[in-house]
Structure formats: structure tokens, C-alpha cells
Length: 78
Image 1: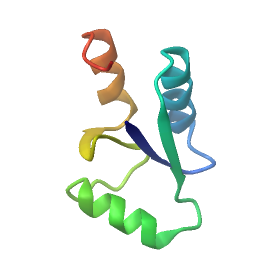
Image 2: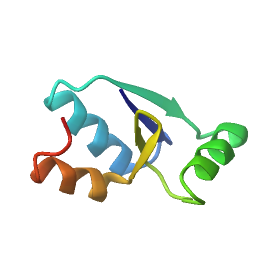
Image 3: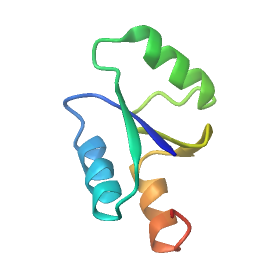
Image 4: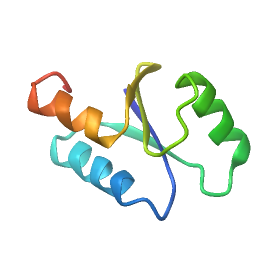
């Protein structure tokens, strides 16, 4: 299961959600726009990553949109 930490003003968050939807991949979205605790927890799990989206698969940090898009192009996202 994919988990994506987003903010409501992030264009790359929107792109990631559109990619997952187009591939029929289930994902859970956690909006951290006004949730500092969730942001800090996600950042800690991501090794200090500070930008969104923060994307995880089965609790493994995959990176941001560019990282996940690269996995998609390599056929490693599904």
C-alpha cells in the first residue's frame, strides 16, 4: 500500500496522486498542510526529508514525485 504525505498547495503532490490514480494504485493520503506532528513523524521516517510529497510503500520511503516517477518508468512501481 502506498502512503503519500501532501500539502494542499503542492503541484508535485497533485502529480503523484494523478499518477497513482491513472495506474489504479491504491494509496492513502495524509495532508500535513496544518499538521506539524504528522509532518515531523513522516520526515523522521524518511530520514530527515523535508519536502512533499513524501511517498512510502509498505513503510519503505520511496522519495518524492521524481523518484516515484522514475520507478514507474522502470516498471518498478506496481
